[in-house]
Image (cartoon, rainbow, N blue to C red; front, side, top):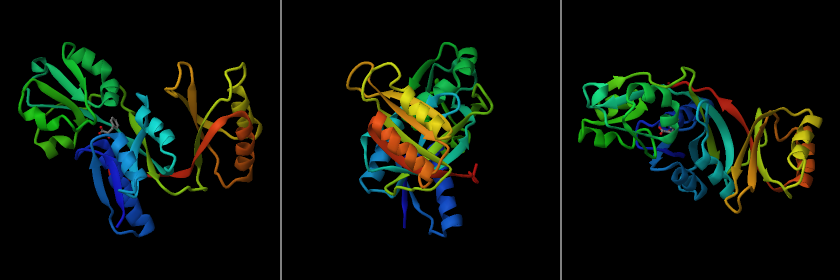
Length: 282
Ligand SMILES: O=C(O)C(=O)Cc1ccccc1
């Protein structure tokens, strides 16, 4: 039986993404239902898959409001063994859960930093004086909400039932089309799909150093769908660039582009090709 690591505890958006991947494995690959294993942080879920404790990890990679999930990008670079197996998008509708009977009684709001960002305007308007505290996931703080009626958490709506906590407001995200993209990470390098992801550092800090890699995708007629930079943490101003392209690794054109890319980058890492899985359970 296969196993999937995800950010927990129960009721998190990552659990929903992992449930969708499990459903897809059952319906498209005829696999017996895999076990879902919750971890307390995204990094721990990724490490579990890298260490072979689980077969895969389903982790958030970017949100339509909050942008990239830095832990996922940094871990993917650091752990050489993991590749992207699939991509899936989950719509995100946050609710405010609390034992408080009205909004003006709330003194502290807990949630994952991405969720706090996604509800910034709503929080500023409705609970302007509440202290905002970051947690590892949207469901981590829920057990302690029963202890104190001035606590609230930004969580998925379905978590209210799971943890037996009333819903005080819903939905509370600042834009209705909020969605998060998740990657399924595993040990296999897949060379076929609609997209390919890669990352590199630049050999030197000279004019046009980044232009060269970007130009060669244009010359090869390859469309880029995302670019993100992350500090290497080695020196100020030293970056890694993460790029998604709309091309498959087994396309000779992509192979030609990668050969050229090697000449104008350093530490090039290719995370493989993948396709989108349609989320069926929402
Ligand atoms: O905390 C969760 O529930 C997660 O799965 C991470 C997350 C947080 C906010 C939006 C999407 C995913």
